[in-house]
Length: 96
Image (cartoon, rainbow, N blue to C red; front, top):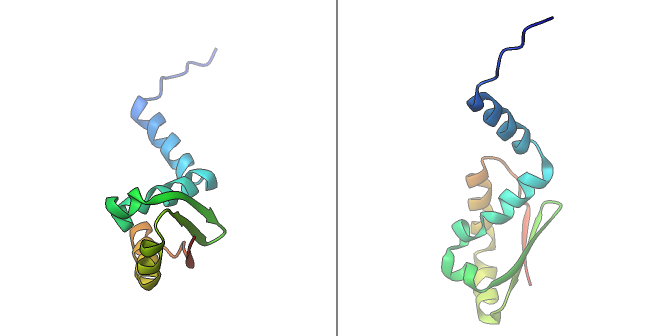
């Protein structure tokens, strides 16, 4: 009989994290979860929903004036997103 040696817990967790990083749904949720960090907690408090459809981030806001103001910052927010993730993941931010 072949003897099996136990795998260290750190190795198991590292393997799980690597698999999760390659999972598209986990990546999508990570990108959506960055919104409060990118936009700030005040703006995030007016956000009712966020969806990532393809390479477009759809942000639903409860304030029309905030939507208007963020329209001018759309390109800056997009660049911050891509810089934070480390690659070009967002092509467009659509405000609703």
